[in-house]
Image (cartoon, rainbow, N blue to C red; front, side, top):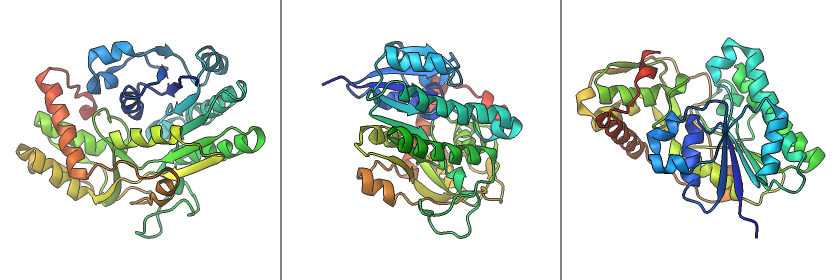
Length: 326
């Protein structure tokens, strides 16, 4: 049996780094691709020996031919596609956002099509942003209509549609996963990074204001990475899209957990009253039916682990706080 070879795009991003950490525990070969050559997020959660094990290729998913050559040359069997631009970047430059998030994703599927029978599964990052604003407080299922209110959400919905057409036309199987507020070490960009930044601010003794309130669905980074890996191992045929659910909680609750884990921070973390313009909670019943039980780290444990790792990095003089100034 052929040894699996994984291609991870967006490998130097937040979820990318955690996915690589998870893949290192598997008996697989791995090629990691990113336009950035800076592995600082990887170094926050891996040791230097693990980083040196990685086979990194500098590349841009907008460049089709090199991407296709990488898949062929390394005999890639599984793709975890995480490369993309976040909400602020898509808002600031919709043309660039569409090029990276939509054309880049089409390139991934088209590169797989150029190597028929080689790719067992493409798993890609979609987002809860496809839903737009929620009409009630009930957990949202995959049956609810999508109505994005941001370019980012519209691009992600477009990717889901294109993935379905690639299966209908060419039989390429895929699974899109929709997380909401993913948190953990390495989360340093976008509005939903604020809870993680608040944890870091608490460690270094700085005040921090979270720019949203209400409730949201918190998913620990390790659990997100486990879901992506579990999806690649599935034998599901077709083009599927699943919600990812963690633990729905009010922003005031995560502030309380930060203060419990780091009492010195009491009174220094504040938050805005306005909720995010997307559903507060996602139902993961569909993915659990399809793939079985998934790891689910309680919010308290996830906050504690994140703060402990930030404390370790701070003691070692390796904690980057530049994101707190943005």
